[in-house]
Structures are given as C-alpha cells and as structure tokens.
Length: 144
Image (cartoon, rainbow, N blue to C red; front, side, top):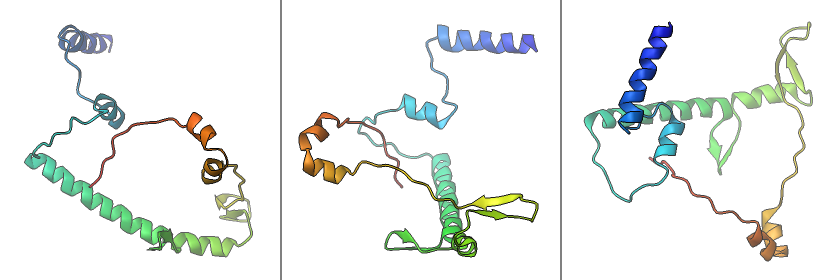
C-alpha cells in the first residue's frame, strides 16, 4: 500500500509540480475555482460535449417532472401543492408525523422563526448606510 501511495506521489510531483502543469480538475469546485472568469470568446462543442449537454438537459427535465410531482405545478411562480401538500394537509397543526405508535418519526413540519433585514425599507430609510455596507461580488452563471 505504501509503495502505491509513494508511486502516485512521485508521479504527481514530476508530472505536475516539477513540470508546472496543473492537474485536471476533479470536482465542480475545482472547475469553478480554475475558471472564475470568462474570456468573452466562444468555443465550438465537440460531439462528446453535445452528447453530454443532451444528457444534462434530459436529466434536468426528469428532475423538473419529479419536482412537479413532489411539490405541484408552478402557478404565478409559486408551487400549488403536490405530494408534500397531501402530507402537510394530513398533519394539519401537528409538528411530527410518526410511522407507528412507538414514536419512530417519518418527518416533521415545525414552525421556525427567522429575522431578516428588510433591504427595501433600509434603502429607503438610510441609502448611505446601505451603500457603506454593500459588497460587490462576481461569479459566473451557467444558463442553458
């Protein structure tokens, strides 16, 4: 086992560190870190990338269909209820749904309280303060 690890480390050292060649990205975070900003140019897709894109779109459509089944269709930008609505309607005002009388929990639907800043009201009340604490960020957005 030690020989395998030493072999891999040696290969990495000479092929990447000494040769000054970055390794291939292994995760989405690697890709987003390496390519933080676009160069403004276009690139022509290879047949493999076109197939990957088609597969990606198929999976997205399947996810959307499953989300519609779980949460209901969107009307006016809001979900109107699917399977989750049926469960919540059964639960009513109860906080937890149990699978049996011995107390094994299936799910919960509990009240939570959060505090949020009303940014629209703050901008109206003290625009200078908003400007003082506004932080500009930059990221790349993937759209299909």
